Image (cartoon, rainbow, N blue to C red):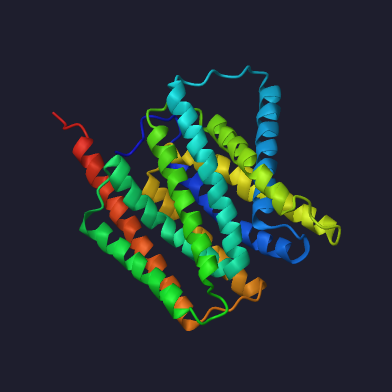
Length: 325
């Protein structure tokens, strides 16, 4: 069922929010790749600063908006405490896994391959998870699309096994990241149904949980950037925290209130396309023929999944529309 009545946000604006978030995310991996060269930060530490910085910025924005409007905080709609705690905990942990594993994939196998595998496998896991947990039907077209995505992933991994741009460890991290993304998206959709949650507060809470989970691991890995090129490192860390994190995730979670899970995951394909372009044009990464073919098959299969999803939404809308008398 397409959630259009449970939120005051128009569906069109929700689509714009998700699209902007995906575009911004495409630059996060590039900034991380640059940080790995000079900062000395590892994937977990970088993810902690991204999450913590995003949390601080989200809280600051909320405080400024309240001061400007002079309005008191609006009480959040009622939501059972048990469901709220579960939603926040699952989303926060999944967010931490998603981001930390993604940055580890970028470090291990490069920006282009790490992003393509993460964001290509994500919709497949989301589609399967939505079928299992929410009863969203895949249909014949969806099954074929999922199969095509798995074939593209196999070509990417096996065809690039001897290439320096494809490394098994990086692929593993990317698949773990995709699993975290799937859990985060499905939990937001399933546990946030009914309009009983404040999406902004949910985002802040998820970031707080993620930062707490990451802090001890980041401390063991090395929490502080090196003094060499410190100004450049701080600028890049600030950018990651502000644009592809605080702004992008705030918009993404708000958009998920009215956009179907599979639809949002397909819009997010903007991220691997832009990341791959940045990697080749500006970071000097090179894609082999097998890697390019696997990437193309994977993205086309996920795009086909989008078409299936869109058709399913139309059919569902027609089935639930009132009959004119």
